[in-house]
Image (cartoon, rainbow, N blue to C red):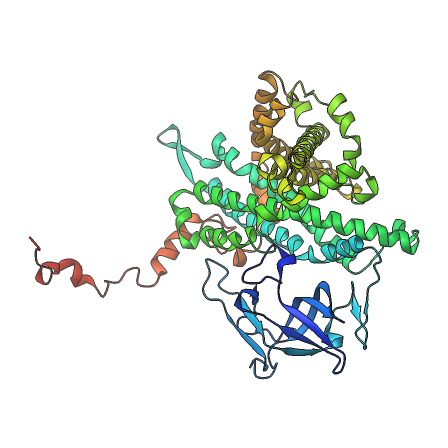
Length: 547
């Protein structure tokens, strides 16, 4: 889908597919290099087919972006077909095992049947048809389908972060530094600051795994039209309306969760690297490669800071229309109660730690935050329009004000809400120990996330005086201390096998120093004299003074 000069702005794509009724073929064409497709995984050297998004033209009319199944190379020889220029984009920061490629079409023809026609089709005579009479519903269905990549990226982020946190916590449980006496050193995991560096990311890992596993499975059901019992009772029109609204909500949710997950993973992997000290900088620790590989998640399928604006746009429309049917996943159904939430539920009520860590209380704070930021953003956009700004200018000039923060808070709230619903399911709630442990992790994630927004909570009057902020901070510290005794068991529960951990610091045997010794002693040329040794000992013989 991505092109050299257009990425996140899919409407700006310039690759075209013109239908020729005489041959019943589409003619794909790339007008110039800026419109070349790029960054497609495995396209560089080996892909034989690609799904290509291009503007569909038939009978002189542009029907917008549509996906096409396009043969690229001969499957037997891997030689590109005539009319196609395809190649590798070169070395990247990470993910070197994926050959990302570029693709250029020169009047390249494909059969009419190669149009993937879920949202629109072309008949033999060139007539364009679509099951959607309402263009917004067609866009909603398309957005829902396109969100799959972002949903999967959020899952990849949780996998990267889970590997990093496994390495860092296992190492912290073995590594000893300082103590009450010289002969009594403590494992660094015992230190409060190490716990507060790592355990919020342990909590984030669990939260992301729970939500992204569900979201991926749900998106498959959505994309394949698999209906729940409740949906099977709907009329065809009711289902089409709900599906379109669901597509828009999936788009808004994935446009928030993908940036949120990749930012959490980015910061978490870096914290894990630093928490492992100097040994964490070794390539054999595997944290550097993780950091580089995850970096791409912040960019592809929508650069985070641009993509996340899609969420605030949807929330603004939701607030303007005040229609609960526009949020069938119930990620923002409470917005219809915005005025009531701001007027009657606008105060911090927790008086002690037990009340502070209650997930319902944390959710209430997040709902107030969303409503407060949404109203401020709505007023800002409205004021800009009254000053003569276009809708585009008004939305663009409100992002730094509060719209981006609004989208982040919306994503954080949904992660928390979904996890609360998850641990209340019978297969979790029936095991009190598991529910207790998960409850602590989810509460820690919620309070840790909420702590980032205390300035806004005070600005809006939700928090007053120093007591709420002190209680919030102390609750985070105490939760980390409570989680410490379960930390190794919690990471073992999500850890991949040692083959995939592949880190001298994070193997399940706990033999950090033996693994370090083995790695160092067996490293190539580690114990040999370098070929350039004479450059060190005899440099005076050929490097005379310039004075």
